Image (cartoon, rainbow, N blue to C red; front, side, top):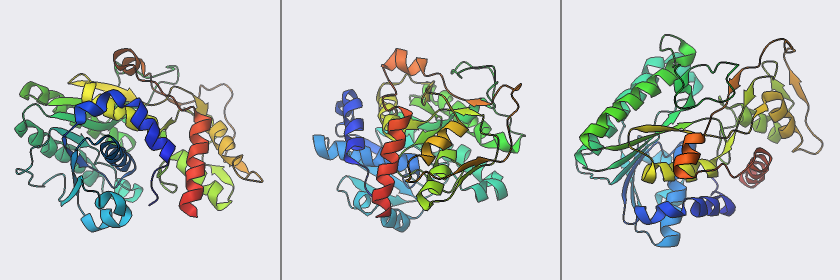
Length: 346
């Protein structure tokens, strides 16, 4: 896997600059480092530690250390990274006393989500419980739970942006909402741990774009990019009218490091962009990246009388409390991702 682009690493360094001094000599336990979000957080932390001589020590918990090393050999070989074998649900970590925990593990492939939904729920809930037990033994530890905007359940089409006070919630009896419901229960465990001294903060991630985003999974923008890279037509499975927003992963990483250090304990923060586009518009912009542009087609026409579906956050809490901003607009985020993919493919 190719290294992240220097300008993306520099972006995170610059826009989390208030946090790095708090992480000097930190003992960080990070889960889910093989995934998209986890690998971004690990690489940006290692980069900052090397550049600023922070002396950070990161324990990466991985079910298959050899697979992690094969995917990210430079990170696995870093002097500040120690890869420990173990499953987040059952790993015995009594010998570790982290000052900070970053819990990203929970992602699963579409096949596992469809065929083994109980395993997905168990990984989220029991994995969080085990990591919280580690945090409780490390008195005063800060804990970042990488959660999801799916905890809210479907966004009402009449609601422009979802904020953290939204009264809805994912339905655990609906297979399409099972993941979000499990994420919310995991958050509630973390919120309860604050009374036992854990500095628990939840980052509710919305749609993302950036290097390492899977191109053949459940991420619409990733699938569009995968089609464009291969020179295939981009074919939408719906009418293209649903509204989304995409945050570049460099902004996401800067926000997550800020939340870990300065977020209010027991509080959830939306992490995402408020720049809203339709699925059709996003696909059309991806199509223009190729020369000549690839074709974009939809499986059906939209109903002009219907309000389009939405999945767009309000990020007012993060802005007002922590001064966070989404600094990379969609078109720039798309171009940066495309440029990295050319390097990865070379």
